[in-house]
Structure formats: C-alpha cells, structure tokens
Image (cartoon, rainbow, N blue to C red; front, side, top):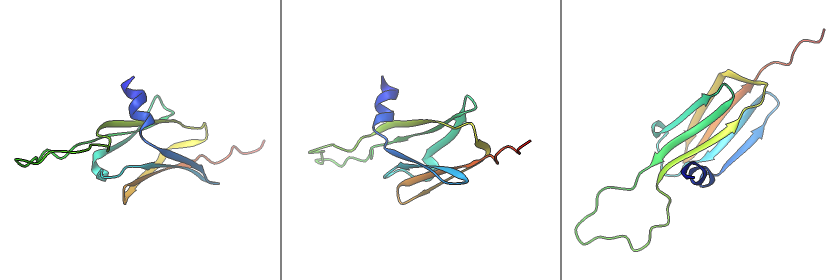
Length: 110
C-alpha cells in the first residue's frame, strides 16, 4: 500500500521521440544526488528517493499547515522492448528530473 501511495503522489510524463523515450518527473525541493535511477528485472525503470522535512525547529515555531508531501517516493515504468538499457541518462534541473532511454536500432530487414 505504501508503494502505491508513493507512486501516485509522484507525477510523471512519458514522451516517445524517434530515437529515445523521455521520462519527465516532478521533483521539487529534491537535489539530484538524492534521487536514485535504476533498472530492475531487466525492463523496469525505477525512480526513487526521499523528501525530508527540515529538521530544524526553533523554539516557539510550529507548523500551522503541512501540505507538502514528505517521505519516500517511487515511480516504476515498464520499458519497451526496443529500449537500450546501456544508454540511459538522467538530468535534474529546477526540480524536474528527465531520464532519457535511447532506442535500440531497428532490426535489419532480411
């Protein structure tokens, strides 16, 4: 159940280009080195990490409202058969993670 909540709370777009797939995931307030991108089971792209609340609370200061989601997050994407698992890159800029997975060249016609 926790995985389902973590996945539902992490919006993403998947875009197909002629030579690659792009996975664009909103990651506001998370540094690039706090995000883990990996492939599991040879065909599932996993983006995960944890958004932590500021641990510094000054005396007399309290939250009046807490709406921003904290805790672990994760998204899993089934990769197509023509995804090249050797050519995956990830860039995080301004709170948006973009993972690019190149496509394998089409098979030669016989």
